Length: 303
Length: 240
Image 1: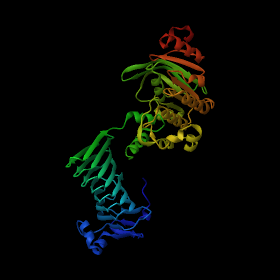
Image 2: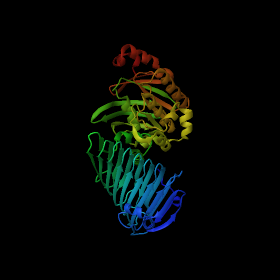
Image 3: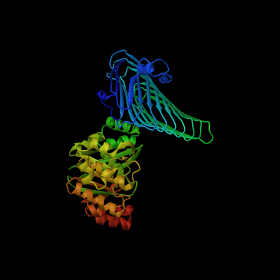
Image 4: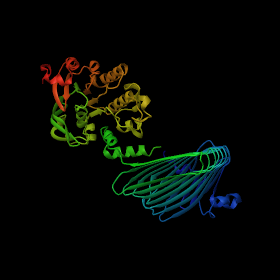
């Protein structure tokens, strides 16, 4: 899952400044503030009058992935983004959102709130990549609203973790909607807290959340994952962690809440270490211990 | 001499497994090592490759005259030693092609399509995950071929294969290694593959000791079949 070239972004922001918006036929792309001013109906999706962030309203089918890129480039910047993505009925859309720091030592902060609305029968493949410097602080809160019979494939991946990372994601599913979410973090020297909540609100909704976390270089990583079944629905949680070295820790807290006797929700959770047998096998294929470890971790984080 | 093992004693979990092993393999030579299950054959193969699980307490291993007894496994591989595993571990999320890209001395396409029959069917699968017995052997063959080794130790490459598959595996070993003068040590407890590959020297190991060596592998197989492994050392036929 390689990151795309920022120059191709349909919405491209550096620090607080919008560098480029590429209009696409059938898609309206605005700053969130412009959308707030233009559309009264959009205001209900923003918790406050937005300062920055994007508004993307997909009204017609597009054949290529939509791409946003938000960069930190200057020192001591605090971004405060409110993003809104709306996919109209029966459209099938691919989307990639990239948030990253251009340098390792910017002492930046990135605070993002996002709402993603999938209208009835629509389908969204969303790849969400983060990559930060070791001194940044990042909070990312996204809410997905899946209307009747809509479908979401979501991948959140941190390629390089900041000093503090908080990820809060909720998935709200109506009748017949389905969600397959993958959250992957390769944590080095970080405090990471992941919260995700899959809410199966109406009948025949179904969802799966898979989480893979690696903790190394004194990382403290915790994940609170919850499925709430309010109707006849199905859900599964799959959380796995790897602890690589002394001083690192992983905490996994899966929670199931069932409010309907016909719902079926399940979970599995495990935390382990790198298998010595796998490591030795790869070393006996000529990889150094470090190369073998990295290959095993990459495999673990591949979903 | 390509490989020379002198008075090798090896422990695992505090228990002595190999008891003063002596073995020599010349450049371009193919040898077989026979023995019952649990006799220490696999431990010998793994120790030659330097698996840290096994501790050498006495003796030395030389490769091309260089003492490699304390060398890291990956450095032994770089020198030209390779091993196929009897029971290779699965590595979820890592495709065979990704591993080959990291280790191969040849273009993968050439390796998987021309050299190993059925190899290309495995490239996009996770390493050893849900592989059948035959697929594991194919995958192991692909990997050792990729390394372009000088010596290959095949650990039970013939176990669990039907006759047709066994013949295919044997043909690949003959064509890609033996005919190219790459030294080969065939570790086997059944000896099924020896008729195809006709090793120059066959050794028998029991309880961590090599009890005999013979040039005629057929005599060894006949005697094992007739008298069993335990009787081998009592037969004058097999004395060193």
